[in-house]
Each structure stands twice: as structure tokens, then as C-alpha cells.
Image: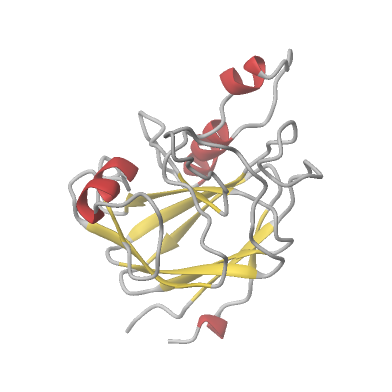
Length: 206
């Protein structure tokens, strides 16, 4: 299978996007400008009540950090996505929640602010899908070091322009991305400027 069989598609800055992935199909997710965090979810195409779970994934792998070969599993502990390549320094997050309007209010925003929680549900609606909850996301390219005392830090992404992570789908599913709109903290880099990201899918297996 060649990932070059499909042209690059855009995940617009500050917005969400849902994409259908067939079992055994690969998807390469690219941090085009180097500092954009992508909140990422997956839901079963057969039953959206089954979705990718960070807590189940940490449990089944007995680790919180991502590495090549790691399998992300669903709420039913079934494989959903396998990491097959990663050109980044390896900083991705499986611990923190998606940003929400409540988070931006805590940061002093008084009006509406784009957020990953709303982006998830808007992208699902565009695909004709719904979820009654906001699952914990896989935060691609987010740099959250854990200190020896157990505390966590929020640092700018360590990925570089063009760095990418590639997954293989282990079931027919939807992946949903949110190009995180965080422009107050340094989550999306010192410039605090959300940018587009891109992805490419391989050919659908015969």
C-alpha cells in the first residue's frame, strides 16, 4: 500500500475534521508547520458507542508514552489503531483532556473561544454521527513532560515542520482530528499561533 495514492488533505487551523478509515488502511498525520497539536479520536464505524479509550490503552499496554508498535484500543479493549511509524522526537500526550469553553474561561476568556471539544462534535455532525460524551483524546504532538515528583508540565511541541506519525487501522473506523485552537498558552508553540495540519491515507485494501 502506498500512502501517496491519495493527495494530502487539510485539517484547518482551529477546526475539526472527521475521516473514514477502512481496516488495514494507513493514515499519515503530518505536523506541517511543526508546532500544531492535534486532539485525535477514533470511533468504530459499526457502533459509535465503541470508541478509542486512553485509559484502556494505558491499561492494556502498561505505559502512558507512545512508541512504534503501540496499539490503541477501544472501550471494549479491542485494537483500533497501531502506530507503525513516527518521525517526531516522540512527544505525544495520552493524559490530558480536550480543551473546552470552560478551560478558556479559566484562562480569562469572556466570550466564545474555539475549542477541541466543540470541534469534535461539529466534525461528527458533519459526518452524520453523534457521541453522547467527549472521550479523552490522543493529543498528537503535545509535549507534556512528567517530573520525578509526579507533576506534569506543559511545554511547546518538540516536533519539527513535516514530522509525522503513521497509524494502521485495526477495524473500520472514523478518525476525528481537532487542530487545537489554543492561542493563550504555549501548547501550540511559543508563537501561540494555531496552524493547519495535514494527513494522507493509503489505498483502501482490496
